[in-house]
Length: 509
Image 1 (cartoon, helix red, strand yellow):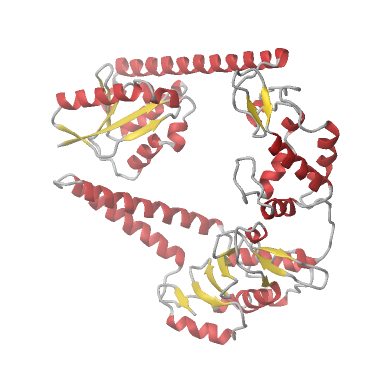
Image 2 (spheres, helix red, strand yellow):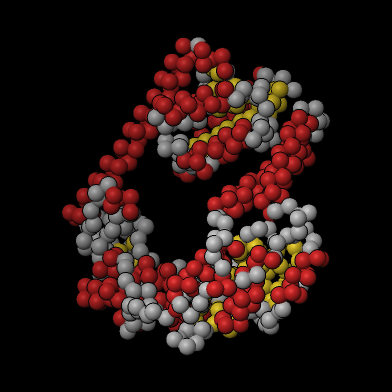
């Protein structure tokens, strides 16, 4: 039987409560009952509450997945796409809207608009009347969206003018230390949250770091502004400290500021004085409460962004560093009591990862009879695509397509992951052959910075378990070390000997 695919869309969440989705489904059911030579595909593409005015449905919605499925050969020529009308496919400007329609038709997929029973095919592109009709529908849809957009903008402009002149509340959405009164006439202050905010400002004014403030609040089990205990984090505190709503100013969004939308002073009730707020701003601009211009080379983390906590996945940071002490690697979530893994001596880890592994990287290559990780991924992509194509052909004759369709989805997901991994590997530059890491002096800032760059290129990721003193090392060349010990130094010859027992690019220790 011939295959039909349904696409349904509406723009706003409000429409979900209305008749839009039911109406579109009924049109599809009616058409199928009148055209029984077609069977509806089990995959229905739905963008519920996603606008087509700016093309969001094509960028991050189901319509984009539909286009991807065409690109990957998952939707065969001869299939028909059922939509209520062309404006469901796009409400963009005429050029973009007609190009989307042309692409679908040129791929051998017909489009049937159910509201006016029009059948568009690749031949329609040579029919001036069909083309003009499609263009006029696209123009009307775009104009309607432009009008709606203008009305919304004018409505908000009027609300902002009323708020500025009379203090009228624009919306119930407000900062979380306030709430709108039941009669919608004023904002009410939540005193318990304001008390916490004032404590945060006092701590920051006393030069406490953002991390120290978050730790203090979590230690005291203080509720955050969402009402949850133990979940304060530095980024939330940083945003709070710079929020002008604390001194009554309603700030436009970033997009609004770009369009010239102005602040509204006095819109919210002040919970801090101007002096309290602005006295902290200078301190706020420094992440640790003061500016440091240290030339200490040990402040350069050789494994920055590369080494992560195996338990929670956060990137490890350095702590307790001085001019003579290298300090420790620690999970940042430990400071916030959200990870229990202990700190580990940085000197020992660097001696193992840098002095043993990175220095001898040229000797840690996969044997010549083993494919590189990149080549393996590329071959896997070819195999996956062949399997997908074979399954797509089988769909045409299979009595039960559900199992085959599920297999295609799984294979397609793996194919996308492999393609992403290939892009990442290709974007990583190769190690500088002219640089001999053995000659670097890691007591110098310049050499430590160079070593850090080399480590970033050599390792995809290092997942360390400071509790068991082991780590998993993922090399950029595809080699993997599992449970590599970090508690004691290994002689490099023993490490190289272990390559003899490699299993699918993985060595177990």
